[in-house]
Image 1 (tube, rainbow, N blue to C red):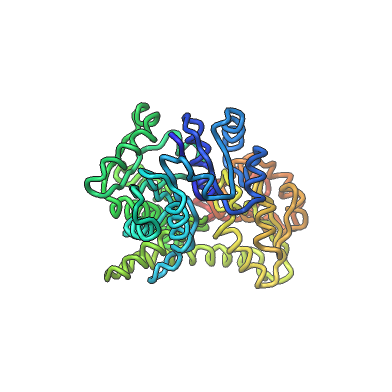
Image 2 (cartoon, rainbow, N blue to C red; image 1 turned 135 degrees about the vertical axis):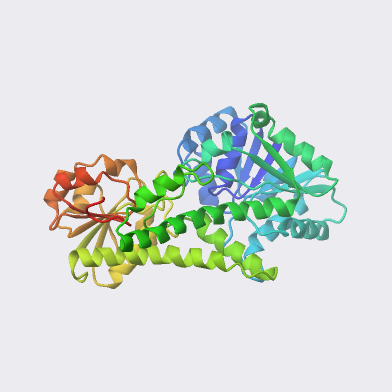
Length: 438
């Protein structure tokens, strides 16, 4: 199939590159000419495992193209995907401006019988609005509007696109043309046994928001348990391990620590709560999830302060800036939220991250970024593990402790071996665990 992708960010680029790898002819569009120039050279503008390799393969095969003009991506396309970003939605849905602009631009250039797929995460009812503006722009255009949200994890986005655990297609009642086109689009995945869930657009839209909000809820739940564990003398790692052994609950997203971050979970839980308010339902649980998440960073800042006595004038090392391992994304990263709190109290903050150091420096100019962990640790009064990079588990902790002014290690992700850290000379402090239980 001929596919157009509007928006070449973390969702659009991964989607387009992966669809090309499945044999489709794909043109990805982005309004930033510099970004398009990089992509034409085979250089992605963000890090994602396997993305650069698949990008190069698509360019070499000749079925992956890039443009900064909507018309080039849409002309002759059978399916056009809207993958534009957006900030959290407000009660008036003004944050959906990019989606509306994309829909209008597609309508002006699209051929008849085009299938417009909204892949951006949007509140229920957005597909109907896309259809409305499409008709207003081109009353004579024959088209379908489909909701097919992505369920990608940064750091695993290519894998999740090529080996998804489910595909969701939301189409209006009676739109067999749109449904058939999506089955053709996803045929290689369906033939591999991937489950296809066909539903209505609002259900598909709400399911995406609900999935991300529920993941955020699990993380905040674990952090609430951490606060209880600290007071009860319990070990939150043991508590969540026992909980996660129940298949109805599962172990994923039950890690206590700095909380969730990134672009999707913070945005989507706010969007879901605002959408509920707009629909007349007070979903107060979602506000509490956000509150606990914000509290998690404050708790770690307090732990660091207690460990070094006074923050002013102290040099503090943050191991990790990305909101999670496997990505260079620092949007809403808890590590940077922690850095801001520490800087505000007069501390010097230096960080090392295997991938996200440059992004962190652009996001927060007040921090120092080191080239390696030992350079960053030199003279530090405390080190804080902020991201679960596997590289941190493999560090020479004895060497790290030797170059620090004070060998204090706060494991804000509970991801290190406590005994190994202590044997290396550190005072080891974890989250939701006593210094003896951890």
